[in-house]
Image 1 (tube, rainbow, N blue to C red):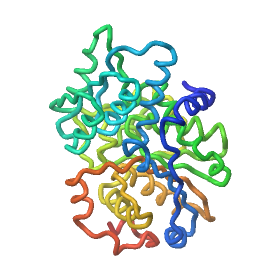
Image 2: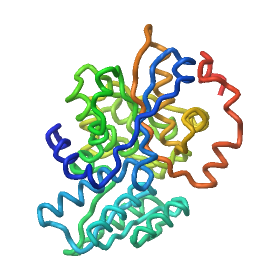
Image 3: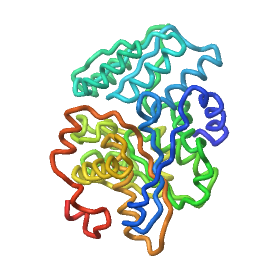
Image 4: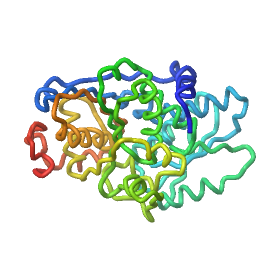
Length: 333
């Protein structure tokens, strides 16, 4: 498992190559809930998501070590593919990204725009299988989450402004493959041992929760059917499983809750966020409901890459008529 030193070194390595994204608040939301909520807005990050942190760190470290190959390959449902293409372009590397056919056209186009070759596959399983078959001597694989340097890169998000942890009781983040929350956990716990690390995933994509509860990794046969496309992974990995066993809690979020909070985050912060980001705030509300006194929390907004068809689904019904301050909100939607 990585340690805090590897994350600080990663931060030194990539901080001039990425954005230090802002922390935002909503006075109205704080008043509605009676708590102080900070949002880490990675929708303002390069390529529109946190994924550039891990991808850039992995590529830059290989460059430092003189171990870069002629071509980089990966599989991705969107954000990691874009990030790796962007990171690779900084080092003039050829990149091939295997993507499931369900990947939004916007994310496919963006990945190509950074110079990568996009190979569409029938599904996630085929994408992973074809990458695994890559065995050329001039090729290096940088997976979306099952990689120490990717995890360390994701953990640098805490070091943009570590002072916010001084007043925070908990951090909330979505779980797909588990790399993001793994890096956050190592980084945050090193700076504040008392802080709680809480994850969130869709009810219909709850492989992390199932894995932690059973003590054995659960794997889907097909990609989960959730609007939060950033967490449509088939399973966590053995590597990330070790970290997930140490976090404090994992909440399961319904599709309606995801759409509800996607709308409200966009409305309150006047930004664009993708449904995966909404998982964090949905989990935060569940946790805050059980707290007896006012709390301060940090909610991770993972990105802002939202396809037009997803946008239409999110806004098909108006959830802004139901205030976040309503106690029965989870049951009302």
